[in-house]
Length: 428
Image (cartoon, rainbow, N blue to C red; front, side):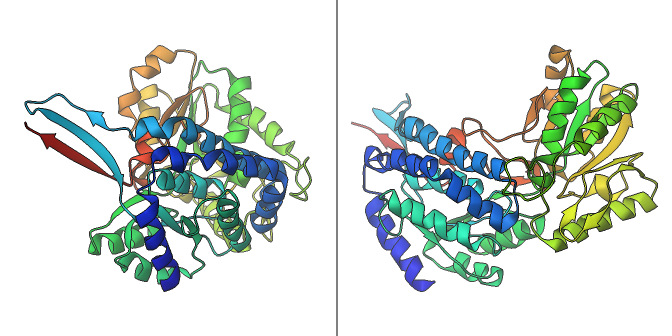
């Protein structure tokens, strides 16, 4: 650990002095390696955390797109900004903070890492990544990819340590800031440790996104989106739609169509390209989901379909008659479970959506787009998607409010999270 920290520090002292053009010159090769080897990398992802291979390939492809995006835009984002003041000259520069620690999750083992590491390294930082313990091969592969792309040794390093050693790394004076994507409990632990040492941190934590269907929504299109919004990666995503808020006049029709659609999803070997939904990443995760569902049923939720677990596989499940006190409404369900609650008015839907400790994103489906645009500020979320599922895009800032964390990844906002915004004033 000490050797890796020192290498990161020594490399960063040189790397930060390189021009932005030089740093960017490595990104095309990074993108090419990802694209050329996407099948191999996707198989690694699938073997480690059971994601269907087609979704794993798409994850690797998205990482390549991220590299291209920052190759085309990072120089502009980090360019000196001249500002007119009373002084002879005044401007703002964006300089790296130094060595960063990333603590990353298993559910998107490539994407979560690349969206942290690429903008951070382009800004002149170096990074150490403590990846999830159940995806060690993915973790090692990512370091190899950076090295094959020609990045100086020490720009990106895998740090295979147990969780109980993260605090020691954060406390080390070489580390200047921390980024964590993970659970609320992990976020509290990291933020507490970073706060003790006055180090900045960015937290991308859980989500309990609402999927709101108004009376005038196009049900056929909305159901098709709903399947992907909830079942992608077997529902193991912070931005997955979890609470389905349906207008009472369309609830029965929506649930009927959704049931038909999810029961058609093909299960099986995740390495088979026809498989659409696989098991959860670990059996204990499926057990936890089972407890949440069973407790909600005991409290009055009605099981429409699914609800059975076989080891780590949990059937795609729909629950109706869900109230705000139930675990499947109050808590984040990390698996393929649809929790349905009905409403009468838009105002009631917004209130239900905001009745959550999380605030990552919300999807609203309607044909009256202008009406929803008037209510955007009423949603206590990091993102509002109208007639679309919540998703991340390199061009748009990503992050949440409340217990979903703070700070932003991606876009111009993301690359500026780990820089020193330096004000310079000159008078002749």
